[in-house]
View 1 (cartoon, rainbow over the protein chains, first blue to last red):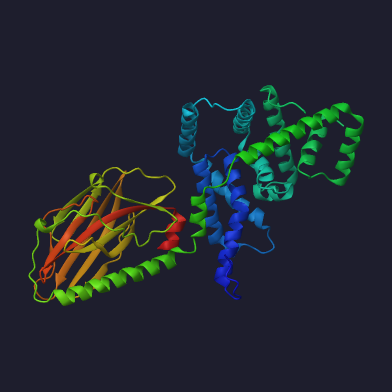
View 2: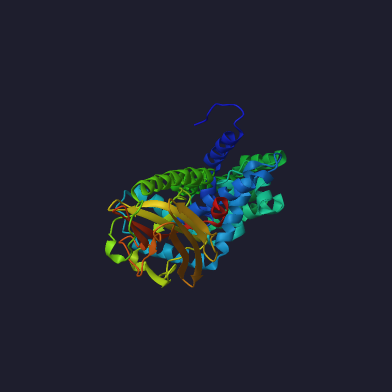
Length: 184
Length: 279
């Protein structure tokens, strides 16, 4: 809760940081998840990213775009985590273990279909290149424009447009092959 | 317009990224080409699926929120708890000063009692996890009088996180529950600063050194306790463990009241960044 007192720079800064978290934590988490991290790893990415953001907030330039700046930190943190081969293998093992451990769900047909469809998307996501996934995720989960996402990725806007298009095309192709995608 | 160009425009359209000229091109294609309309429907369906998938990815856990929003607090919490610990220590000093004059000093394992230890984690905050090393995980060795060594069984280390160890000293009077006396935080592979505590007629000095061998931890505590009058506190001659894994390092009997000093090591996992914030 805000104190309402003027001139309390530190408190205002804390409030600002809290509102920054409320605004971007969900996007950061979903970006990390879409990049293939499990929930606990995505939690770590969020915590680590906001730690970095807090420590680097002095270097944030007012003219820069806040969402671009923060999602750049999230992206780099996620990629660092993904680059760790041991983590990646462990994660896949956990994933495999979890899937095997899941009991057959006793759900209505509609929910089963939805679950199956989401599972298919996740499977297909893993077939995309890391660059494609990141670009698509920045736009869909991060809410960035192509220009902003291109800044985060450090590529030209045309290159980013191409990555997103290729990603969607691959998704469409895979989902069609799996019988999950039909125009309504 | 070829199929690939059409799809590229539809893809951009779904993200509201079309240039005015591209909008015009797409509108014309959709007006006159049924195949283009079918393709657009398929891409929109794909977008719906993507949106649904994105929504299903969830939110960060509440504990992450607590961790992040507590970031500004560690120093303040530390200072506040340190003041509380100092107040308790001062109370003990007064008690000792009143009841301890002319007391007789004893040492040895016979006076030890197994009692649960109070939470002494002065540095505990929401930003990390702290766990107590169980007696089965630790082995205390009195290297010589005034020098202890504790070695742990192989610990599950967490990648990406750093271990920090809190060496605590607790004071126990009679059969009361032990109270926190002081605590030294030390990072793996480093030597803590010499800590010196004066309590009435006796003083306590310690310098924990933590070395990390593959998968296990070794803490060496150089320890000195001495009193101004009757020889002060005496070091115990053999390890005495409580069920909480604490080791009694010194005992005395002052004014008919037994007093014991216990050492305890807690491990704590923190991220490198939090660790730098706190130390």
